[in-house]
Amino acid sequence: MKKRFILLLLHASIVFFLIFIYCLLIKNNLVFEWIIYSLTIVGLILCIIFRKDLKKAAKETSSDRYISLISLEIALIVFVQTSIQFEKNNEQFKKNRIASDSLFRTQLKHAEILNQLQIKNSMDLNDSLTNELKKIQDINKIQSLSAENQLKATQKQLELSEQSLNDFIYDTRAELAFGKTNIVNIDTLNSNEVELSISTKVQNTGKRTATEVEFRQIIILCNGKNMGVQLINDLEFVTANTSKNIFFKTTIPQKECEDFYHWFQIRYFDERLEKYTDRSYYYHYFKNTLGFDFYYAKDEQKSILRKIVDEELSKEGLSLTIN
Image 1: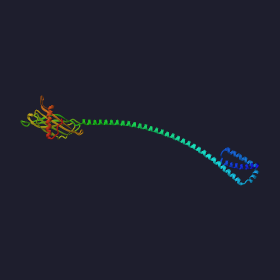
Image 2: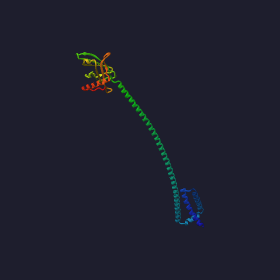
Image 3: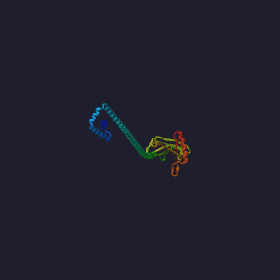
Image 4: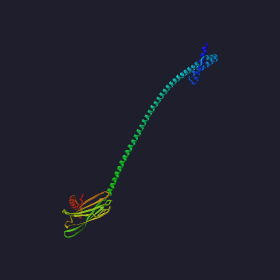
């Protein structure tokens, strides 16, 4: 019985020593380590107490048996360590998986929050841009309306300016007006004919020079005959606020010299208006209570006289009357 105990103690001492070395190297569970440490110390104490019997048992036991025992113990320790490491790895894998899942959920949650935040910021930015764009459109609309009103005002002002300019040009136009027409001299040529010298005063009452001035005169007898056309075109212009006396000489029968008609026409050009002015005047020379003088012809007489004048102008290849 004692021999078996000694062998058990010997083997246990070897085992506990190996486990002791393992615990020192691995440092696994603290309670387990202290149990091993205690058993190892107890075993050493017992080995010291039974050292003689242990030496004897060791000598009687072959070295191969010790080697096998140590190998078995080492293999057992390796298996235990492998199992422990596997459990640790499995536990760590679970922890890592849980941590990874948690990290993934956290990242997913953060991503969703970030995405929602980005969407909200984008919507807020779009709303802000839309509002700013609307403000810009309103400002552009107001500016466009203001510019349109300003353009209308400018156009109106331009029209008024043009109208004022046209009015000014028209108001400062050349204006040739007739003054008094007189017979300044009557010469008796013979018992049948006399020579009349007629003077007509023409004055430019306008503010510009009349150019391309022409005067035409015809004496028409009461019997409908005319005494020819006199064309005076030696006056190239008549300046403003000046007057001219136009003289006309013609020979008529003596018996007609106290009752006849006188047609007088004036044509001139205004450069600023770019317009010709053509006026005809119809006079009737006859005796009244105050004596002989020129008077405006009546309307019915004027129609007859104008027809005779146009026939004569047509023969001469000249422009016809317009009034």
